[in-house]
Length: 262
Image (cartoon, rainbow, N blue to C red; front, top):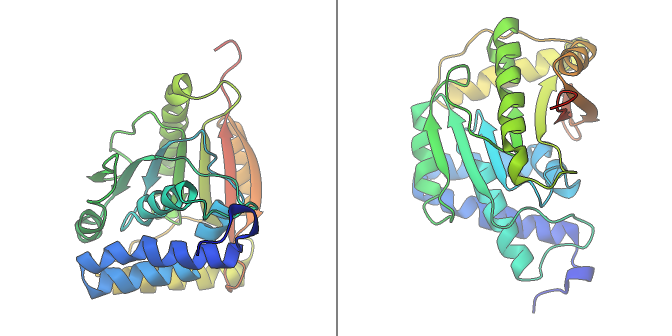
């Protein structure tokens, strides 16, 4: 029998979400399935974002930049199912149900694996094989960028962030007035030299395992990231996101601020 909503253990709910959200990747082959299980099981960002309610039920339109296998599409779909069935922990804020997901990914192999694993989701996710620096960014409510912005140089980083802010502001008309567009940006803190070096090494290793060419990276210290986002019109809250890992990762929760008089 399903546990009532107010007594359901977060750990139990996460195990169920993990199983259901990764099962569709069996259709993409053994690599895609095992990679999805490992990513969702060991990357603290996914559970951290879900359990803290950082998306919010009013932010239905997600843009996932550097989306890989579009794991967030299946996380949102599974969360909506658990909420409808009353199997969502009372400690966790609700996620949008249903969500509208757009993923932008540079690597065709990852897009192909994602396409094989999201066909059951409605509304149908939109998957784009393209470069985050040039791809069209639709009006949206929440943008997720995990560990990919440092693969372009500093000027390109600023250009991407400016376009992200503009896409979030364009989405304001379809959100409640008190719900700002939100960027969830995970970065490495270059001031933590050991943790940053380890995270860079792991990034390069995983990139090779996924069959992709390793690119150079352009890091910043946490203070530099915060100053940049503030200058570009975001209100920012940093959240450490390295629990259980040797990395120096920080999740920046950045809400897009409309210009005065806009």
